[in-house]
Image 1: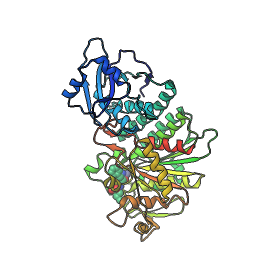
Image 2: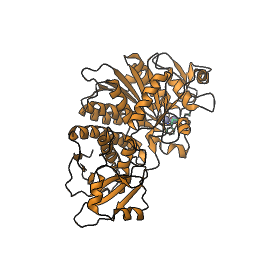
Image 3: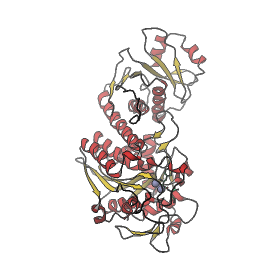
Length: 484
Ligand code: BES
Ligand code: ZN
Ligand code: ZN
């Protein structure tokens, strides 16, 4: 992980300067001094660049002197600026500068919004992400230094908090971007457990016989087709004085080939990302520990590889869960709900005040909401609102979808209690949510389907194509709100 330095003064030796401007070329606070220093030609330069100050617009200004600041980037702030568009503006600014610009000065944080400093630091850090583990000619990048011109007095604490979140978004992206060969379930569990231990978390891994002993029917069935066996990782964060217990569950299918119901080429292409839910919950609980959030958090990562092999489960097999529920496997490609059910059974046995599961669960939710928005499902509307609010505050896009009880009948099976395929063509995201509901007993529970936003094809503002780290910020926000 790369380090970031933040200071609240400018050394005047920055490689790049990012300033913000509203439409109508009204400079954001702190920018006037910069524009003045650069001279009157700035308006002409902006006009020449067709710059209007709209969201997502950037203009690079020619450097008027040899000794002045490095490249100056002006980013549009749009007319309706909030924390998330500010975070995005910082991302646009970072990406407009060359990667080799390692010291970046900015005035973007001098905007009258609570949390502006954190948002700017996050946007810069998220956009500075690179996954070059497997590039033979990658250049080593030095640490990123951010200079907040005229920055706030409480900078160290703010910078530390922004770092905790940024590091963990990077970590989640790293795990998702890692090719499947490099993340067998047990390897992934150990990698996560190591980072978690560094943040003071305790953990436990169930693998092999443990899985039989604890009746982890879904993991054993889904993982049966791979030589690289499944496992369950539990992470525990127990801060002193916590009043609430949040239990997180993440889908960790390290590669989803579909199993015997094999996927077509097109749909298999991105399936190394099918463990993004597990990555998000792990990264989030580690971030919470670093931030000292006063909520007890337990995270379960259900890790398995969905392959074809002599030990693979067959469509029409029936498996029996720890809570006694029997499930007919209608389709081996609906494996996510099978492994999630194991973790939800265990989660529901404890004293959780809230269970939240995060999973790249259904193509149907992605069809419904498109690639940028997650689906929130809960039987209790107030709980859905809490998670929706956390996502909104964190700047992660999500939308609450219904769980109508009269749809439950489409999860019925002729031979078992339920089956893992929905009986009709439509509403598959709801079907999966209703399936998961069978395993949470009467516990307060919310399900987040991140099949869309976990992994994207396009680079935009601070989001780079590939794994996005979606969910980390929402979960951190949620745990913080539970701490009161
Ligand atoms: N991992 C997929 C869901 C998915 C699709 C995630 C697209 C990210 C992007 C899941 O395991 C799956 O294959 N679901 C099937 C279920 C169907 C077979 C009932 C689906 O959604 O098509
Ligand atoms: Zn699948
Ligand atoms: Zn899957």
